[in-house]
Amino acid sequence: MLTLWLLGALASLLFCIYVYTTRNFKFWKRLGVPYVIPYPLVGSLKDVAFQKKTIGEFLKDVYNEHKGLRFVGFYSFDQPAMLVRDLDLIKNVLVKDSHNFPDHLIAMDEDLDPLGSKNLIAMKGPKWKHMRMNLTPTFTSGKMKNMFSLVEECGQQFDKYLETSVAQSSTLDVKNATSKFTIDVICSCAFGIESNSLKNPKAEFTHQLKKTFEFDTLRSIKSTVAILSPGLLKVLRMKLFENSMYDFIRDAVWNTINYREKNGISRKDFLDILRELRKRAENLKSDDPLYNLEDDYYAAQAFTFFTAGFETSSTTMSFALYELIIHLTLRRRLHTVYNKPRLPYYCLAAIQTLRKYPVLPFLDRKCAKSQEIPAPSGEGTITIPAGTGIYIPLLGIHYDPEYYPEPEKFNPERFTDENKQSRPNYTHMPFGEGPRNCIGMRFGLMQTKTGLIHILSRYEVEPSKETQIPLEFDKKSFLMSSKEGIHLKLNKVTI
Image 1 (tube, rainbow, N blue to C red):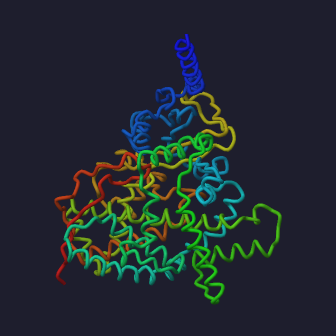
Image 2 (image 1 turned 90 degrees about the horizontal axis):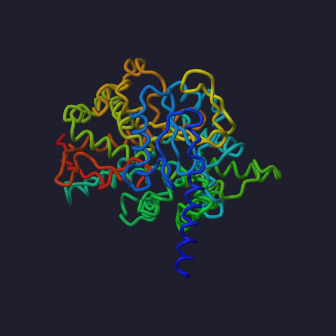
Image 3 (image 1 turned 45 degrees about the vertical axis):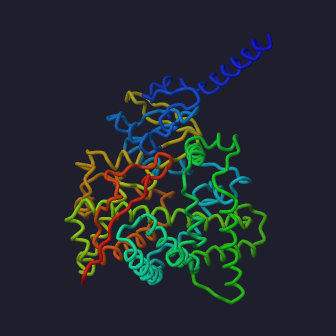
């Protein structure tokens, strides 16, 4: 009898779970919108949930399977979401009507993720506008020129690191090497801190920041939920980052700020802007929550600068080097780096790398209020309700042969001024577009090009026995990342 009762209770529970997780599954059908077939619990994300595809690969496949459509519906677990294919509609979401799509979808619990929930990516509304406006001056062209000497100093340390590493073994994990370089650059330029990542293999900055992007199965599930179903993340009280990471960043920020204030040091860098912003708020003594921000809001911006800055640039450099071992002609062209007319080719190579390997392979926005858009049939309109997740599949667009013939081919010439003008806008967006574009774009490109120059002006890069061709991507990461690292052979060039 007890067994029958337990089986009945279990069946009732499973039925309730089924009904609840499928309650919205007729949404797109009612609107007459083509959609990806959903399943209980996981919605349309079956392959992502079972780590057969990354989020970027899933969105790319949906993009490719629905040619000719302006948008496609799918179910992000139990919630309706929309993938946008049409470039004009993408422009409306990111730029023209950005006030109706002002925020990213991610929403973390402030108690569990105090810095992750308060950084520039996760912030929303007036607080985001206030912080973005005040941080933007850090990345002007003038500031980039002033920072270049610091980047170049790190480049010289990078030379020494490479020389020592190559003397020990000609095979190098370039992702690991470029990560150390970018950590040192960010620490020096933004915070005036010597992280010593290139000199010390056990440097604390290297250890802490790399932990941020180590994706085991549980971490993969958490990040997937955070991006595709942030409400579920809060309900389940999942935290994305360890407290040790937050404590480390807090200590680095406030110890450096206190030291500068005590010794009258001013560098006019990212950290000084945070310090000035905090002082201004303290002097106002306002009850307005826009200005009365707790210290974690300032430390959170440093957290974002550290984590986003080092991963994006190091990944781009390593993918660029991987492509160059396959393309001998390009390699030879880049090796003459100090012949000034060819220096711009580094920029073309970096931008082309970001086309093939956009570090974040999609953009997301949240619909702030109900929106009317033309119906798929072309007659009348349909209403997209507030809260709907909007996804823009960068990987799909960047590989669309309509915009990039032979999309698998690595060709920096695609991004000459003449060729760029021949393509529609919004077909290359590795840094996003509109008010929510990447604030550190100039800085990221500067350190990427500098790192490539210091490698390719001194070394020939070749495949090694450990080089994986073709690359296999890490299915656990929502970023574009190689599964086994990128191991190349470096041979010193005789000048």
